[in-house]
Amino acid sequence: MKKKLALFAAAAALLAGIPAFAHHSFSAEFDGHKPVRLVGALTKVEWTNPHSYIYIDVKDDQGKVVNWGCEGGGPGALTRAGMKKTDLKIGSVIVVDGYLAKDGSHLIDARRVTLPDGRNIYGGSPGDGGPGDTGPPLK
Image (cartoon, rainbow, N blue to C red; front, top):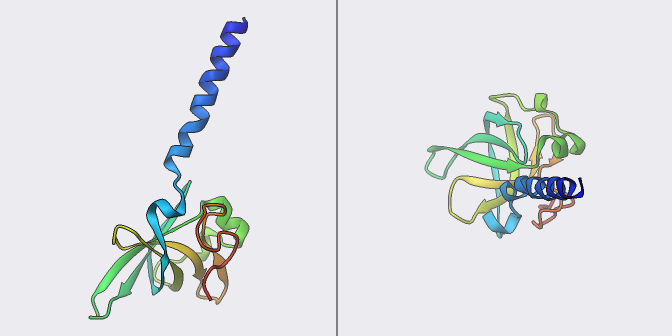
């Protein structure tokens, strides 16, 4: 019986660690020295764990529309910060302040999301090691 219990405990410990591999620290993917502000129309919402993603169409300096992905905290963290999925309406214009991806892709870590009604929501993953991981990092 003790052998079975020990085997079960070991298996449970291993399985409990699997989701941690999917989650990354801020510094693994984003550059805390490259803040950016994006203003654009919301095109897609992925309200998922461990990170939610919102996508917005932003005009670049030449007037070309570029679709940007904005990674934020999971649904629970965003809800606790005051955002509901229903606040994100496709086509609405939002402002996202965050930090650029290190790989140069059109992805940012969304630290603050300004909704159309003017509310500012902390969009990051608390405790991820990124700038201002306990509240809005940008002025």
